[in-house]
Image 1: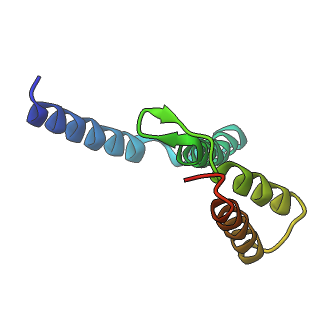
Image 2: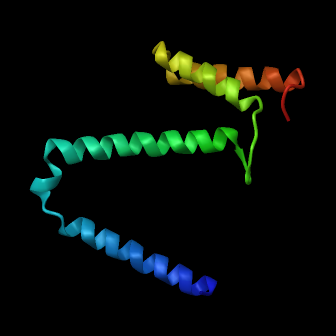
Length: 104
């Protein structure tokens, strides 16, 4: 399979999924279970993205200043701090650890 064949196949699959979404009856989407699943799926995908971006570097797992920064951000979010405070605190922790030479 060439690269262009894979790209065209992926495009056709995306169009079919989009069309399938339009064909689903609106009443089915308004029920409680599908709504809950779509809400939780969004959170799970975002969590997976954060995890991969935090500990992934190419094909390797790297533990550096991003991990403690993410822990600080998680604790502050659990304590219901504002988003700006969370971002600044996590960035400060990562910068401080990098300044101390703990991470690249």
